[in-house]
Structures are given as structure tokens and as C-alpha cells.
Length: 296
Length: 142
Image (cartoon, rainbow over all chains, first blue to last red; front, side):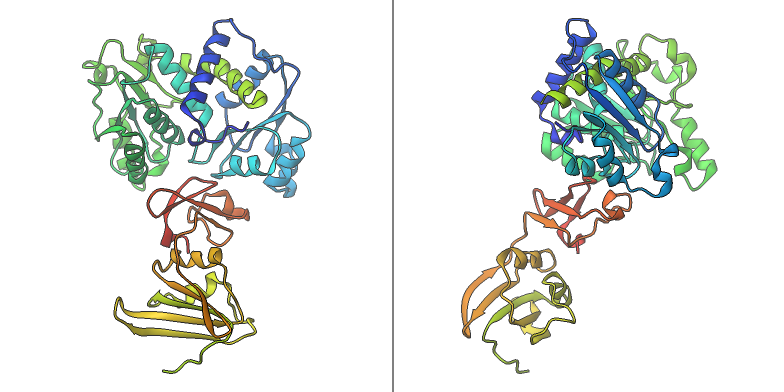
């Protein structure tokens, strides 16, 4: 079974993966995928996705092989299609990250082995979304009815698009907070409202008093034409301890990482900051994803 | 203006004025097409004031191919002519899938590197790229 987009998955499939990850995390279950080989093909940079997939494979009794673009035949001009067709013969499943949107889908269409999307351009990052849902459910005990505030560059961050879709599926309420010009695509928001009756509020200033979960992503300075405007916005959208004064005591702060300067370092030690725990949740969740992909 | 009747072929009527060229392209009638083709532009129409008409001799267009016309001209009608008589007449409707013809307007879509495009119809008159998942209006595809 391929894992390409949250759009392809039904709620019961997602709940199955989250339940499985919970059992693996608690040591109550070992995924039945030992002896298999995973290929990790990352055509662009990654720390967490790649390493946690490799760790998930090893912890599940699998082996992994790693494709490195800079020392591969890509340098000789080999195509993406020929590369994945070749690697298919060396592994039982492939995790692919590529800057072009739809690349994982293309691979899944031409390969017989399961393909897992490790992020395709600005489109989808479904396994990150599953980690986000797992982290929310683990921290709050539920997803339904929670007020989840998505904060930062909602225009370019693929994690935000996938997560907003999944939150709609799980009947959460979503507040979108982004600087002017970096709002989530209106067509996409409208689609979520129509498809899931998702309640969406939009704000342009940092304000978290109603939030149960605050999900932060980086504002990329290079997105702005005016460097002074970039500096002003990134400073305004840097979360400081003072910004959290009116927030709920049991607020959960998540971030897909890497974080650069969008969260003040002193927040890292607050009990609400769960982003490193979230990154660590990547291993059991990806173990569950590998089992789902290899056994369905 | 007089255009001869055709004995065997396809007549596309009620084309939105100015879209006849795109209809020709969608039906893959190019400069090497060996039979007679008549393109009449800006014909007076009771419904739409003006319309285009295309008469293609020697080609019986399938309903599936003809429905692509709905992308540029919803409401166009197609007459299949055999033995100088109308054998079949239908109004085009948006196809469920559009494969290989339209380009994805997303510059970062993998299909820009040569993969065959595929769009699927969703609610309303919008199409989603199978690869990059972007939504487009029907008329944006061609």
C-alpha cells in the first residue's frame, strides 16, 4: 500500500496507524516486517524524516539502503523515473522526498512496491501529518473539538496543508494565523470548509487565548521582496514567552522542526513545548506506517 | 455564407464564439488532416448572439473525445453524420478525466518534466491534477 497523500486515506486507516503506533511506542507490539529492506531516496535535505524512517526500519528488524543524490547517477543525468525503477529491485519499500510536487505519486504509479511520500515540494508530507495527529492525540487524549491554531507561513508550508486537511477529517476547529501575503490558499480553505464543515477562523496577529494546540512553522525571510519587511514580520511572528501569557495552561506547542528563530529559546523548557517529543514520536509512528505500507 | 453538406463526418455547432480553433486542437485536426474542414466564425445565434461552427469531413468523433470540447465551450452540440443524415446528436458534457492533453499550470508539478498529465473532475466544474493535487477550473486546462 502506498502512502502518498492524506487525501487518499480514510479516517479509519489513520486511526489504525495511530493505534498501532501507540502500541509500538508502549512496547506492547512489534511490527511484523522484520527482514524487509527499506530504501530511503531523499533528493533534497532532511534530518528528521530520513533518520526517523531509518531508525524505524532498524527498530522493526528491517535493514535500510540509502540513496545519496550527490554521489548517484543523477549526476550523469539519469532521470527520476529510471532511478526509482532501478532501486525498486533492491528494496521492499521506498521512501521518497523530492522537490517536485507529484513526484511520489509518479513513482507509485510506475512501481509495484509500496512508495511512501517523504515530502513532495509544497504539496504533501503525509507521514509528518500522522506524527502531528499522534502527538496531538497523545498530549490531549483526543483531536475532535480541539482548537488548533496553525501559525506562520501557511502559504508555502506543506505540513500545514496536509495537517489542515486531517484536522478537518477529525472534526477539530482550526484558527489560521499568518502574516499578510503568507495566508493559506483561499481555494484550499474553502474546500476544507465545504468538505468537512471545518470551522476556520483567520487572524493576522499572534493571539492564542482560545488555542488548545499551537502549531508553529517558520516564516522564510527569502519569501519577501523587501528585506526590511521580512525582518519586521519575522520579529512580529517570533513567539516569545510574553505572547503566551493569555494562553491556556494546558496549551500544547508543536513544530515540525527545524525551528530557526520563530520560537524564543526560553520556551523550549516550558511544559507546553512538545516539539522535540513530537520529533521523537516520528519513530513509532513511522514504524506503524512501514507496517501499514508493507502488509496491506 | 454557404458551406456544403457533408456525407460522413462530424459537425460541432453552438461553439462559443472564438473557440473554434481550440475545438480543432482538442479534436486533433491539424494541418495534415486529409479531408475537408469548414470553420465558420461569428455565426449569428439566437441563444448566444454569435457562435462558431466546425464541420469535419471523414471523421466520426467519439463521445469521449467530443466531451473534451466542454472544457472550452460547454453547451456545444455534436452531430455525427453518416450517409448525409444525422445519426447521433448530443450536447457535450465535462469528461471525468482529462489525460495527456492539458498541461498542469503549476510550474513545480512533476509533469513539467515530461510525465503524462492526468486531471480528474471534482465537485463543481473543477479538475484536480493527479500528481500535484492542485485544483483548476475546466477552462484553465486548455
